[in-house]
Image 1 (cartoon, rainbow, N blue to C red):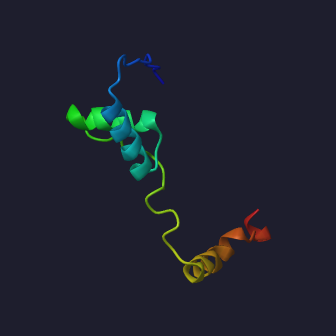
Image 2: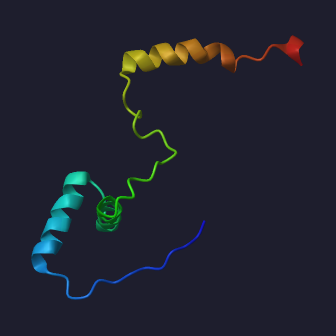
Length: 83
């Protein structure tokens, strides 16, 4: 992974600061992530595709989870004849 340098923005206007804080709160992310997201968008770079499952986490209810775990139970068994 390549580490990029940090930047400091001097003489930050109060209205811009408030808007960034509000944006970060609405998005539920840090100011740093908000600024990077807004910079990527304004420069036409699009968002970075993350290799995680956040978009599907928590999308099934308890009953579905129970059925899923039940259907996977056979994978937990070891057949002695296979070894």
